[in-house]
Every structure is written in C-alpha cells, then in structure tokens.
Length: 129
Image (cartoon, rainbow, N blue to C red):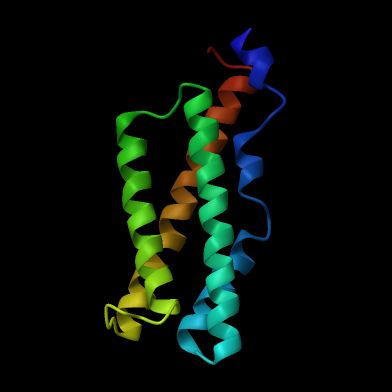
C-alpha cells in the first residue's frame, strides 16, 4: 500500500531540470552584483529553498527522512541562509569569497540530495519497501 500511495510521485521530480539555471543566476548575483543581478539571484535562492522544503516534506511523508539526511538538510539550509544574507544587503559583512564558497557547497550537496531522491524513488518503483 505504501508503494502504491507514493509510486507515482517521484521525489527526484522535485529537482527539476532548470536547477542548474537557478544556481547560475545565484552565482551571477554574487559575481556581478548589479541591483538587477542581486535581486534576481535572491529570487532564485527562494526558488531553491522552496524546492528543498518540498524535498524534505516528501522524504518525511514517506518515512525516509533519517537523522543523517535531516542533519545534512539543516546544514544545507544554513548555507542557503548565508547566501541569502549576502545577496540581501549583507548585514553580516561577508566577503564575496564567502558567498562563492557557500554556493559551491550548495551545488555540490545538491548532487548528493538528488542521488538520495533517485535511490528512494527506485525503491518505490520496484524494490522492497
């Protein structure tokens, strides 16, 4: 029954094909901080945050959100908040290098979360649940 309930809803679909574009526009806001680039980059941060809220919710709903993944998601959210802070006026006085390093972390960890989503989806397609 559990497989039937979630089998048609793939978690990997949350990470749509335009995710790379979102990260590129955040990078552009960091590297070329004109007003338009910063505000557009900030809106892309919001899109990524929404995507990750959906991922966390889907994992929780399926009973697949273990303590390790939850911990990693909390770190990811922290990194996202640092990038958000940098793009929204930088009250913490971060330097561009800080923002670039955090963005690199977000991109790299995204690949890991996408792989987790694919593994969970594979279980629902035909593996044991």
